[in-house]
Image 1 (cartoon, rainbow, N blue to C red):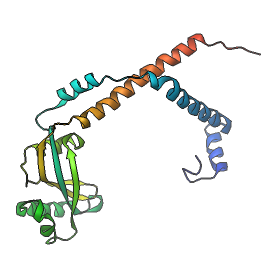
Image 2: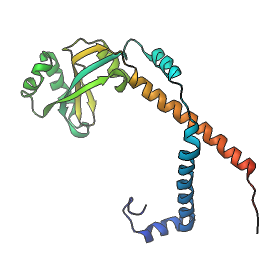
Image 3: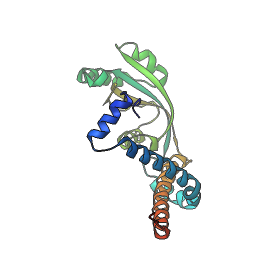
Image 4: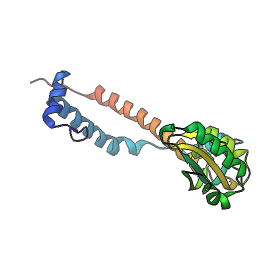
Length: 205
């Protein structure tokens, strides 16, 4: 732990003691956490079951007018680290967007601008994208490009190179499965602890 926060073990001990926590108490908590992880994996996780039929039903219900597409995308980024100069870069991005004729010429067009890059994002399902972006992409045809958006690295646009109606619900089901599994695991763990406490015997010597 000391290495992770780049201090010495003695300094960590001092910091803990300053907050009224002994190093022994920390070690006990770590041992308990490691033991509980072992119990969770061995005794609780095998009890967690997620219905694939229910996941299919929920995934189908989540499909709507904008998240039912698969795309092949390119990102066009006008570099502005930390958003500095984003206003000027947005103006350039809008000029690029007006001149954009499709993915095949995206790189060549970017060469007319300073610090502009074209990145192949490959295949993306709409559910992997922010909702606002997915909604805009749903309204674009192949060869279209989104409006400029300010991101951490600069000003970004997404170009649609291919677009198809998604027949695979894997992406939606993966998120649903994770959420359902976590909820079921939490419930099982709570019940397991309550059962242990109800049957525990504390013997004082």
